[in-house]
Image (tube, rainbow, N blue to C red; front, side, top):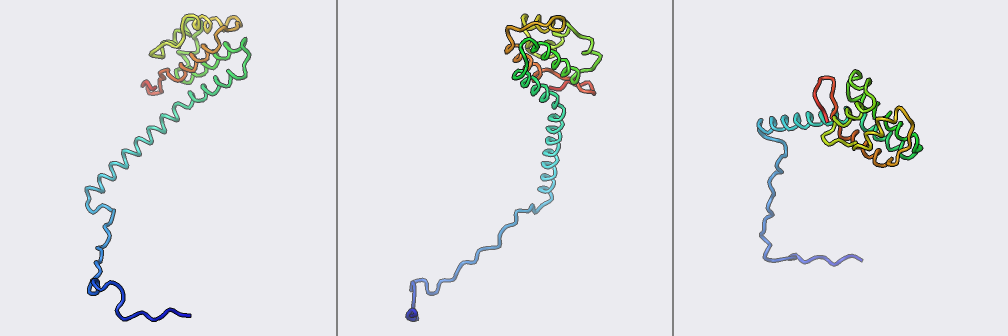
Length: 171
């Protein structure tokens, strides 16, 4: 069973002498002039520079991420009686990484908490938390405000200004 043969005149009679329009060649997306190439080089160099700065900033602040992770783990696992001393220890380690050993290692008590508050635009430790941190080294005391101390410590780790080896302040 095959289809019957088509008549000699088939389709639309008005389009009998119609010629197909041939589309032009496609336009290349590659730049045709040197100006576009220079612009591409400048944009790529700017993007590479910004990526390098972002990676450098991320790498420089790895100690902050580690301190935040340790503080959050401490909140889950530590006993309330040891929490203040442990928070103080983590803050001291973080400060030793961010600042010179000579300026941090000798600090204790009120001078230690004053140093911490001076490194932020908004001091995170209020009067009660200042006393708690200043005296925790000398006596083991249970905090009645462990969550406030933890939040203030996390805020300090995130917001303190650090000084790099070249002496410039970095956030």
